[in-house]
Length: 316
View 1 (cartoon, rainbow, N blue to C red):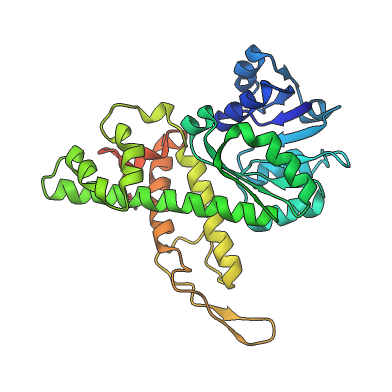
View 2 (cartoon, rainbow, N blue to C red):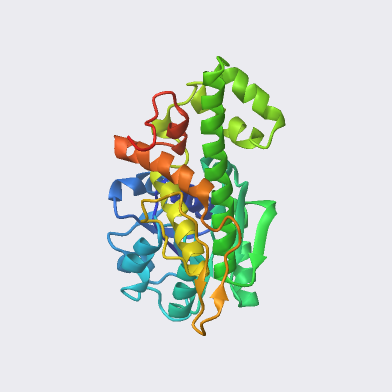
C-alpha cells in the first residue's frame, strides 16, 4: 500500500518504521533532517506535504498538536476525497470532532506509550471512527504498533482522543506525585534510591519504575522519550477540554492554578454544576512544574527533568 507519513519526530519515526516493513512509504517532516533515518531504511522523502500525499492510498499524520494539524492538513484541504486519514496526533475531543467534520475519512488513532514500547510494537492504540469498515481497515494497518491486548477500536475519534488525554493525565499527575515524593524523602534524609524502592508497593510504582533511571542518573534527559514541551501541551489540552465542558472561564492560560471551576449557567438560565476536581488541581500542579523546566530551557528534554535535584522550583 502507498502511504504518506507526515511528521517524523521521535514517535512518528518509530511508527513509520513499522509500516515500512510492509508498505511503500513517502515521508515528510518540517525539519527535513528528521527524515534521514527513514530514508536510510528505504522510505521516499517529499519536500512538501502536497508532494507526500500525491498518489497515496492512506495518509498518516504524527504532528505536534492540533494547530499543526490545521496548518498542515485541514487548512490547505490536503486530504483527497475518499483517502483514509490516520491521525496519531494528540488532540482534544473537540479537535477530533472538528477534523472528522472536515474530512469524513478521518480516523483518530492516538498511541499510548513511549519510545521503548513503540520500538517493540507494544503501544496502546485507540482507533476511533463511526465507520466500522474504515475502523477495521485501520485496526489492521496499525496492528504492528500495538500490544494486541491494548489495540482498541472505538466508535468516534473524539472518544479515542479522550482515551489519550486520560492516559497522559495519569502520567502527568503521577510524575508530579513522584517529584513531591522525592522532595519528602530528601526532607527526611531518605536517599532517592530508597524513595524509589519504597514506592514500589504504592500507586506510584509505575512512574517510579519508568523514570527511576533518570532519577538515578543512569540516563540523561537530553535523549529522553517524551519531552516536557509535549506533555505540557497535552496538559493544556486537558485543562481547556474540562473548562469548555463545564463552562468555566478558567483555561490553560489562567495564571491562577488554584482556582475552582464551580460551574456556570446554561443557555436556558439553569445552573450548570461541575464534578468535584473539575479545576484539575493536580494537572495544573504538574503543568507548573513542567513550565518551570521549559522556561529553564529544558522543553526538549524528557519530562523527567522535573524530577532531578536541580529542577527549577515553580514560581521562580
